[in-house]
Image 1: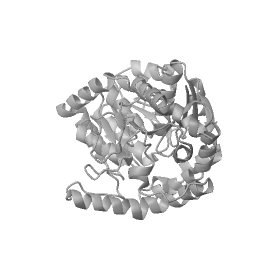
Image 2 (image 1 turned 60 degrees about the vertical axis):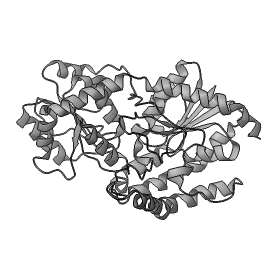
Image 3 (image 1 turned 90 degrees about the vertical axis):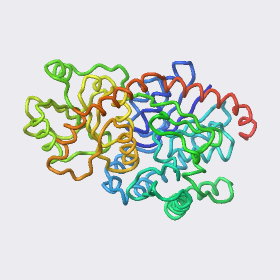
Image 4 (image 1 turned 90 degrees about the horizontal axis):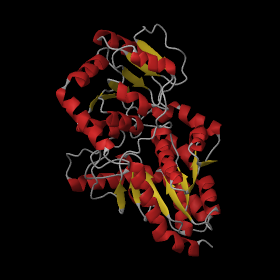
Length: 423
């Protein structure tokens, strides 16, 4: 079986696909992952073929655009980048339609969705976080599209349809339909996020039902397999300097800005102050930013560390609420302090708080917010109990192995019929 995967986005969007691809390769299947150039090395290290969906400059420009991280402008800014990838993805997937393939696509793999519509290629769509499964029953949390769960259900349904038509469809449909009409498809796409983008042959949720319970208005058929727990270097060793720091004292608090968000100097000043007042040690995973000045010996700055290896040795994680970091902290059984900035982070943060495994802070931070949050999550028995339960649930299942079986099932059910339509 040949599997084409399309994963568009940041590390939290792409790493789950690398983990799934690795599991497929280990079973002897051929895997091609179409994604961003920034992830080429990580993809190829796992034995997957890499195909770029854009060039490096396009990706960096999109990620560094400040409008992408403002809730009021993030969606439109993101769509400008995504729209340019529709046709390249479609052309690549369509070029392989005569092969015995199955396609597995992320939220933004819309070119692959169009190829499925045109040629009937077996297709599974994937959700790495629940925020884009629009539901009137449990509305996702986002500052721009805030539908209160306290409203009557009929009103919530009406509001979501209005939001989808007036904002989401109006933004996305013109580019999608332009490509559809160019290749001979007719009509117009509607209700893109609640219906159209989800594969009729199956939706694969890479998060567990205890993190987000399935709702009556989610697409069907739908399978929830759990968090993939892949961070790009499964089982990777820590660099000697970091390992020595861990061995030299108490479990530290980890602060990570994620793969695309950037904390400013004030944030790090507040973090150092909070750690000092707690008598705690810290690790700043700060990416490739310049060295943070005046760090005490109890705080270490690193460019990167494999989170799956690091977090089990730490006391807490502070981050912007990306689902990848969140899932790894849940698996490690440590409390979290989250500060959502944009996109799915607000909804992820809300779900973490509902679990009781952490707290959410609002930006900009007050002088004592971080200190008070860390005191709470490190001392509260309820948080400790919720983290222990999340750890037990996370290690009880192999999400990638379950996902592989669903990919194979989709291929078995739909592969032969697709080849007959490929011409």
